[in-house]
Length: 376
Image 1 (cartoon, one colour):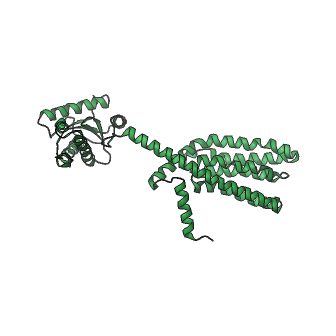
Image 2 (tube, rainbow, N blue to C red):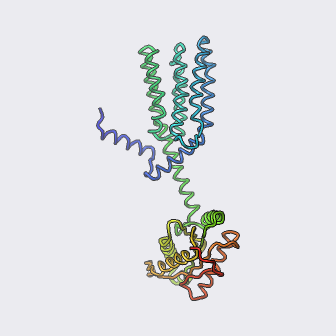
Image 3 (cartoon, one colour):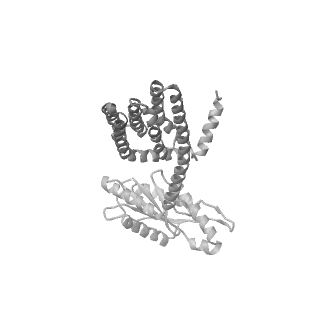
């Protein structure tokens, strides 16, 4: 019997072959697979069930005298498994629904074939063939084994009862070989699906985040802000935004070069993002301009948040090959009001407040006028 350590090594090698991801990424990958399975299961299950029922014609061709019995058996088990086609409001995990569908439908094929002369031998290609579509949609070996094991056990029990010993041994060997091939297909498919998953994640991240600073990109930030504004209007909750601009940034680029300016941009964005609450979000909207969106935030708290960002940037000392840089920011704050038709109108007010901060000497926070009643 293999030692426990050898099983762990075997599992580790299988994980490496499948391109297994980090625990967090693997969990998200599994969740994405489950969503896809849940969406596909009704159509897949119906097609599978119809195929199982259509095999009643094969039963009639092999043994007409048993066709009525096998057709009834097929219909009963397919109808029982059809419960797995339903979503059940998400109360039943998709893994259990898949097991119900697969076990009952393949079970119908095995039990019906066992009633026919040499039926199990003749039906073996169809029975094992049903495993391979599973590897295309369920590449996780543990889940796949849980799906395949009950029908395989049923085949072994029924085959031992109705087949001659030599024929049963041959059928069992073929079934085992197909299970090994199934595992190889699942490993290969899992590697491909994981690569696709990570590529999609990287693409989504690059579309939503600024390529230089790593904070939210303008388009995605405005999309999130529009959603939060709609919620704030619907439920009467406060919301505020702050527009942040680095003072005299052009001077940095002209004096120390664009690489130094890029380093400073990244440092400022990190400092501002670090001064926010978990519910706030921060993005770059152009050049040296950033926007912070603060849901559930009234005037007083918004000004306090802007002041934290201002102080965090003022404390920066950014080492670059050219020089150690420091800078300040001017910030304009605007709170959502009935006259703001959309995020662009709110941004315009914040931009006007930012302009006053620049005109007032920079390195300061200004509130959009007229000031709203304090709802903080």
